[in-house]
Length: 152
Image (tube, rainbow, N blue to C red; front, side):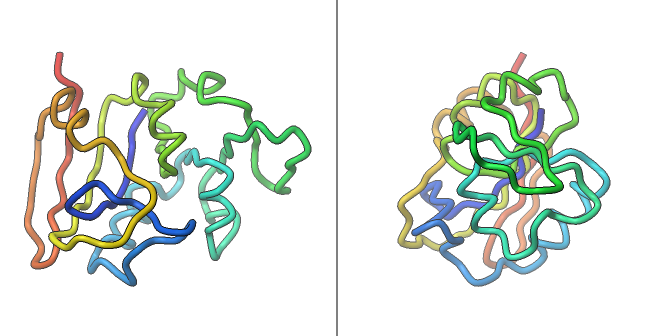
């Protein structure tokens, strides 16, 4: 599986179930290009935070323990284990799902701002750098874009 995520310099990914920044130049078009036509997997809170539901031209999976949650044209699953064999699926958040999916991840696409934001949800940047290696990196003014692959 793959993870596509944006974070601040401390690994912050959200605040009060919203992104803590207004816009990261080029991040949304990159997200759309990489996930278009594919499978995306998100937690229920990430689903609820989306302004467009479901994300178009993608198969949307929502991981939730709420058995009464039926979002319409999406699939719900109780845990990431149910689709762990989907190697090309993209995990898109949130923090709880990322933590549960960590052992299934082979590749991470990370947009990291150079700014610190007020956040209440984080990814483990230290774990990422210990278990994955950078295979591509580029700078973009206010952020970096890095692709990591799991160390063998």
